[in-house]
Image (cartoon, rainbow, N blue to C red; front, side, top):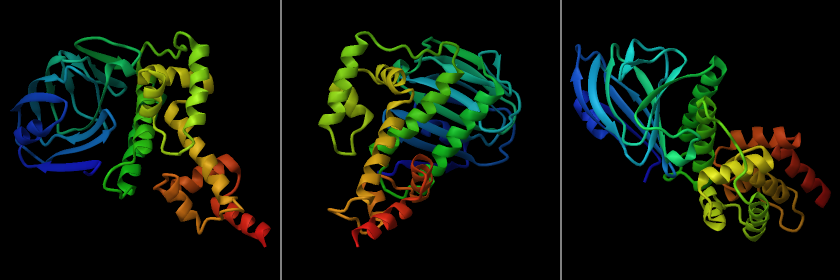
Length: 303
């Protein structure tokens, strides 16, 4: 099953019916001037949706009772109101699980929705809230969405590998959590014991395919608690830590004298890096040289 699905509709009712995570009853407030589009990406238990409305509209709806949803415009939009809360240039809508709402959008609009388990966020509420965020934070949020979409488009695999799902989901979660008024990364209870078990988990899973979900299961922690533990331990999230771990493993493989690799490409694929350009940039930033240089140096030493 593909990780990226794009649908184009000529009719707004069809677009609303196809949307995952929310149910809406649509009323057009003006003529349709463009297509209605939905692009949905599943990232583990989270969903990233990019949409375009083809007309001025009004709607009554409700969100999935098991998900917390965040919605914001992808670019400057006309007047957009939800439950009498008006969206501004630095404001996002936060929908609690099962929130009921009435909304109006004056002009065709491009928008983003991110949905995930409520436990992953530091703020839990019911209903709808409008959150105003600093310009820098909003810019970071837009940048994370754009980066996620570029990565997804470049990844030609039919199913998105779980480690990459973790990385993209965590990147978006971190950007969204910075938007929330209650943004805390305190270590969970019994921090010392969990830190010890975390080290044991990493040592007992030398394979690079270890995922965030694997660690949650091994440590009996929710994903939010695991992220707090990693923040307290390493000042980064678990998916980022696992990616750096795979970069180190790839460097060891490139420098191996006992089992020298055939090429940088073979190492990329073996360690779950499906975007070779991004791999090369991150590798160089971490180790000060391109992976091809590491391989050449290792081959020179083997002669």
